[in-house]
Each structure stands twice: as structure tokens, then as C-alpha cells.
Image 1 (tube, rainbow, N blue to C red):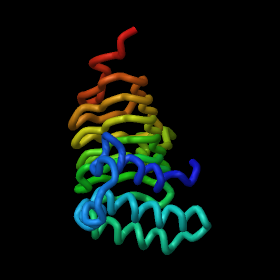
Image 2: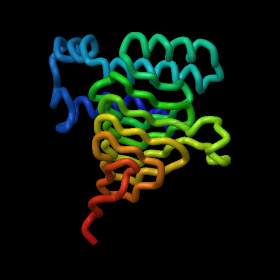
Image 3: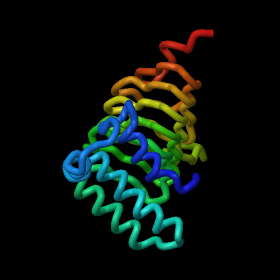
Image 4: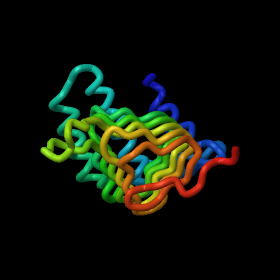
Amino acid sequence: MKDEGLKGDIRILFSEQGTLKGKPSFSDVLRILLVKPGVQALLFYRFYHFLYRKGLRLLPEILSRINVFLTGAEIDPAAEIGPGCRIWHTAGVTIGRGVKLGRNVWILHNVTLGGRGASPFNLGEEGYPEVGDNVILYTGVTVIGKVKIGDNAVVGAHSLVNTDIPPGCLAAGIPAKVIKSPPA
């Protein structure tokens, strides 16, 4: 992805959908930076992801551990997060090593995005999720393995996504199933 992650994050903060609409005052910006852990987690991630892309490994890993301690969000330095991502509540958010998130993805608390891990039961189905643009992942969603969630999809609270979700669909359940498709 291009180096527009931080610019996109800032742009969404100041857009009509963002927390700070229009031209905010200095005190508004300071308040957001000091008290919003989702903003803090993403800014911190942008910094150590930059270091990771420059070839450093140990320092970004240490900084990601500090990010967990400070914000509650565990974001691996190798994850790729597109611009405009919003983590509404950081508690329990985990974004694994090979995860790819598109633009303007909304993540609520207790969302896990990761691989299936090494197990004799996964039968070589290694891989990480790819999440499209403008996707909303509600509270408690778990997305594991090499699955794709299409652009503009919504995944309902407490769902387990272990198969692909088409673009524009609403999916929910354990395992998640499409419960509403976009109009034809």
C-alpha cells in the first residue's frame, strides 16, 4: 500500500463522517490525540509499521507490545492497514501479521483478525484475512484464515467469519452466513 495511511487517517477525522468535522480547534485535536485510544493505537501502529517496512524488526515488535499495554489493541507491525481505518474501542482488538485491511474499515471492540495457526487440523489452510474497503466489523467479530471480506460488507456482532463474504453483504452468525445481499 502507498504511504497514505496516516494522511487517510487524518482525512477521515476531519471529514463529515469523522470525529472532528471541518476545521477543529487546537484543543479539539489535542483532546482526540490524548483521550481516544483508537486514534492513538493507529498512530502508534503507523510509526512502527513504517520502521518495519524499513527493515527493522526488533524495535517495531517491542513498540507493538507497548501499543497493547497503552491502548489495548494488538496490531502486528507486518499487518497492512489502509487509510481511514477507525478503531472505535480498542479493548481486545487483535490484528495479526498477514492481515490486509482496505480503506475506511471500521473495527469495534473485541475484533480478532488472524491466521488459523499451526495445527494438525487446519490441513495446510494457512493464510490471513483480506478485508475490503468500507467494511464494518461489529463487536466480537472473529475473522480467521485465508478469507476475503468484500468491499462495503458488514459483519454483525459476535460472528465467526471462516469463509469469504461477498461485497455489499450483511453477514452474521457462527459461522457467519450472508443474511442480506445488495439489491440486484
